[in-house]
Length: 630
Image (cartoon, rainbow, N blue to C red; front, top):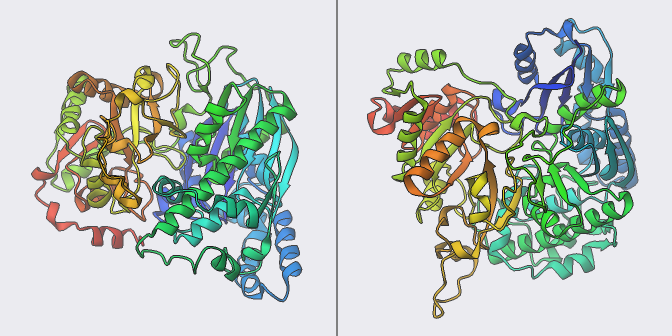
């Protein structure tokens, strides 16, 4: 038996992954355990979980792999600081203590955190880790690979080819020119947090018009046909300062950055729309170039920019590739998975096993030849985190004097919960193993009725306590996805990484004399028969649900379909703003009491808020304070 621990840490979203004889046994982000969102510290608790899942201790590991090369990254930092000196001294002074304490001495840090481990450490390059996480778990025997992010050591994007158990990167784009940093600059300028608010910017884009797109192309970047570009650094400040943009950027876009938590203006909406359009253009050019360069028919994607599901949808619909597979943990957390698999396949030369037939885990421009012959990727539905035992849940609920119903029969259980959703109850849903990656995929989710015209606003404001403009994603039965969305029959999107339009037949006709709404007012318009998951541009970020991968969640959607005729529900992550997704039943229970959720489902235990004697004792303020959240 060969056991390999993969690690990512010390930037954002630290994580651990355990691979045993090539199988992904466990993977999780540290934030889920520490309750610090985007926790960058060494993933001590995630490591502890991964090892416990396999019954191992550190001394039983054969390899420990880290997801980038710290010395090469330090070389880039020093060269950048020297290149901009004396500007950037403040940033240099802030960064150096962290490097001198931990990052430059990673073997020492890892020895301390992994007592008993005496064997070697392997350091893969950052984009090697991304590429390995994209290709090796995919169902493809051969594929082109494209990775795009902010920056690793020097690379900001890379191109390669995977075949069998080998991966070869052939081209790179280098810092400071970066698709990820370009997008993050606009994230910062629009008042959102870098490395966490990019998805907010993507969600804001449909409220605006791309009025600044030409200005971005003309002033900020020199975009080439292959998708590479040169950034005019006079408009940016991330190389030498503590902000993303410069005063010259401010002048170009009509004033200083929006302050966080202040009202959004049309400028921010138009900026979001503009940088989204430009980013999609960059990625479309890159994907076409990768296809021309490699001649491959299939494409694997990873890196933080691969979480831009709007761009992914365009690559699938308009790009030259037949099939597309995206790593569910495409950001830095997934680097831990890539590093471990890189050691197993690339360094140890162990074989990969893929199915020669088309698979339901793949998004494709062609209908599946055999929709029933699902083999899937090796990601296990990305359900790689901890699960909670029903006996432990019962003991916890009894100790809290909670009132609950327990179901022994799955059919009765699913019918009961489906009825709650169908009658517009908001349901917290915790089942099975926790998801690895940023998306809730039906294991740690909050569910609602997508047919409700009030649910989107109600869940944003009363449950999630977040910005009202944020869209919700639909979970839809895979066998009916093309009926509601502009996809091919059985087109799979199990990891919620693709956007498609709601079908014209499901949209609501807009009265000819209705006034045209702009900005946030677009929310007021009813757009389809599933309004709670239809964004203001008639799009939706789709998660398809199938029996093999999703088990009880699939049975719930089938029960909902039987009652309502609709195969679509709202699926959003089980957390409130500023908090990581819940890990276990204790987190879920406290979040349930502190919000306006109507019901809580913990495995086959169902709690109704109206029945709870202590519901008033827990408030959102005390909940966040207890878990030391912002």
